[in-house]
Amino acid sequence: DAGVIQSPRHEVTEMGQEVTLRCKPISGHDYLFWYRQTMMRGLELLIYFNNNVPIDDSGMPEDRFSAKMPNASFSTLKIQPSEPRDSAVYFCASSFFLGHSSGNTIYFGEGSWLTVV
Amino acid sequence: QKEVEQDPGPLSVPEGAIVSLNCTYSNSAFQYFMWYRQYSRKGPELLMYTYSSGNKEDGRFTAQVDKSSKYISLFIRDSQPSDSATYLCAMSAIVQGAQKLVFGQGTRLTINP
Image (cartoon, helix red, strand yellow):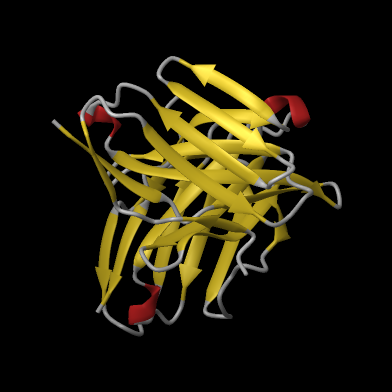
């Protein structure tokens, strides 16, 4: 399997511009997660989906952030308008939750490195 | 107070040393405990997981969980330069039928040749 695929890997954009990050989860996984990682705050969960339905978006920082999962093989995280404080690495991850015996393994993509200037 | 506390380091040790990485937590509902390793400019990858209290060994790595103290550890024996990475602890519980997973901030580890 190719693993979780994210694009773009790197993006530099100007403040106020719209940013769209894309993710293709591992085929067959029921859960998809969006995380943000910074030096100051570490790895933070933004939102996660189960079977394409958003379950918990309490980590989304504000209305400028939105996420969609139109089908089982694609998700987007959009920031509009972007601000310098949004600069971070954004990770998409997926898992196939089998219950307590699974260990709840989550597989991460390689991240999208966003810089807002 | 954060649910999971982890010293961010950085931690630097000589090759061959025993490394001890630790996390504490406050939520007694956590039942699965994991360690992820993250190399520079890569995503985290699962290194080890344990369920409830006890020890688990995998090669040079040993994970320990002490639920009574709400404390987990990862030991690396005979550390190698290739072990240089950021190590994140993670814990999960089932909350209202849904998985809840919380990560520590990560400890940046450097093994010096």
